[in-house]
Length: 203
Image (cartoon, rainbow, N blue to C red; front, side, top):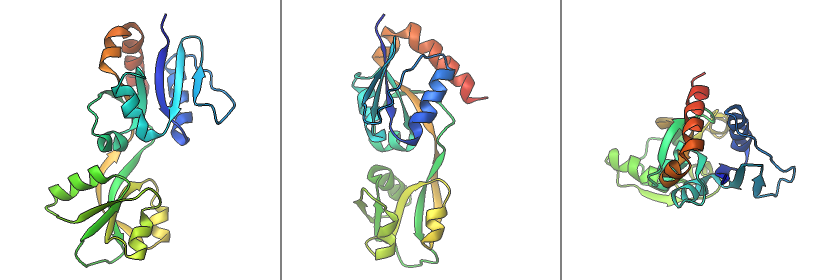
């Protein structure tokens, strides 16, 4: 039997993902070595990578399936089969400004330039979008940008820096995504897994 290859994001989501997949009946073996990029059990191989890389590995078929945040999926622009909202890793994508800011928004910073551009277009704004990689909130505090678009979980960082969510653009959670060719070739493994994950996500 060919191994089922899964692309999972490293960091906080990895632990939640592994727990959920084990509940769904997969036998997973993760190495104690945090630097290990692949983990093999009898019939499953896990590839650990940055969240942003999961859609590419699944789309191109290097991984049969994976787990990725809806925010990352939208930013990637990949059209991947997305059969299950796993109902974990909840957060929201928000439009953020300094508290009480009134000036026109001419420049917006974000780690999600595609999502930001799409949002601004819908709002009828022609503001410039700047892609940043680190703490985008700093862009507001230093005057680099008039606003930022970023993921918010608790909002504590915003409050600590006198920033506020002007609008929630969308709510995000982790999704189970599947390569379409793999769904046919490994249907006997993937289809029951999808059904079990759907049940678990709704309990």
